[in-house]
Amino acid sequence: MTGAGVSAESGVPTFRGQGGLWQGRRAEDVATPQAFQRDPEGVWEFYNYRREKLLACKPNAGHAAIAALEAVFDDWTLITQNVDGLHRQAGSRNIVELHGNIWTTRCTACCQEFDHFGDKLSRRPTCNDCGGLLRPGVVWFGEMLPPDALAAAQDAVGRCQAILVVGTSSVVEPAASMAGWARAHGALVVEINLERTPLSEQADECLFGKAGEILPRLVSALKARKSDPSQ
Ligand code: BJW
Ligand code: ZN
Image 1 (tube, helix red, strand yellow):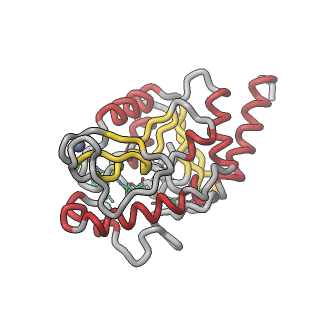
Image 2 (tube, protein in one colour; image 1 turned 135 degrees about the vertical axis):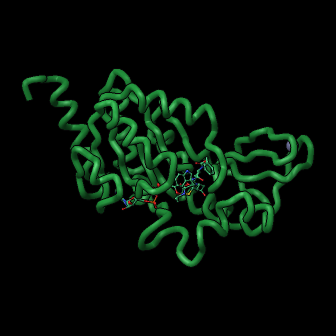
Image 3 (cartoon, helix red, strand yellow; image 1 turned 120 degrees about the vertical axis):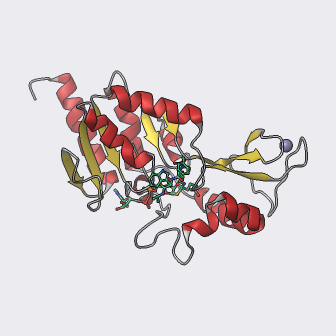
């Protein structure tokens, strides 16, 4: 399970804490359906700004290590709250995007979804098919998560032996509860973060530091153990 902290070393601002994306703006002002209804151009300005900044960001060593973990385990699911698409760029394949993807849009009239990777969109983008207003393909506060993504995440969490929770403040639901669900059926919970979070109390292990430094070491150790189980 990953959050914004994994992309921080790629230069993508996190949401909370120092240097957070929401600095000077309350999340509720831009990341809610009400905000979009009130001021679609203001919300699009925010998302277009982030899309443009993201174009200059590349996956980092943490993303690469997470992609490598997919080959280490027979059964591996990456559940991410991130909307930046950097995990896929790094080579991860079995990905559940719980909060959508910032490169996609959805028509508010006909509900079609579109992929706009790398495109520069206007201040008020419209649907090529029906002319309806497009919205960012992300999940805002108060909205349901995509049902398929939520079901896939629940399935993986419900049968996992271990869950690694990386770079998330563990405050946004329902993602924040998933490690607890895994722990409830006996899974090992390992957290990697710069600092303590509400999850730290429940975690079996907390590794404090940068994801881009800790994860590559974890991959090396796991690969060594796989090739020589006595290690
Ligand atoms: C590093 C690092 C480095 C830094 N290495 N670490 C139950 C109880 C209470 C409330 C609710 C509830 N159920 C639903 C709610 C309401 C709400 C919610 O959770 N509110 C809480 C804030 C209280 N949830 C919802 O509305 C969700 N919908 C839902 O549940 O539907 C059903 C329902 C609806 C209504 C009522 C009841 C039920 C939807 C949530 C959507 C979240 N959307 C956003 C925006 C996405 C679009 C966009 O990008 O613009 O998703 S908000 C934002 O937060 C974004 C993130 O994915 C999400 C989580 O943030 P994340 O990833 O944890 O980042 P940060 O910045 O918070 O933390 C970064 C961490 O990294 C820090 O800990 C750093 O220390 C660490 N770090 N550098 C390692 N190098
Ligand atoms: Zn349309």
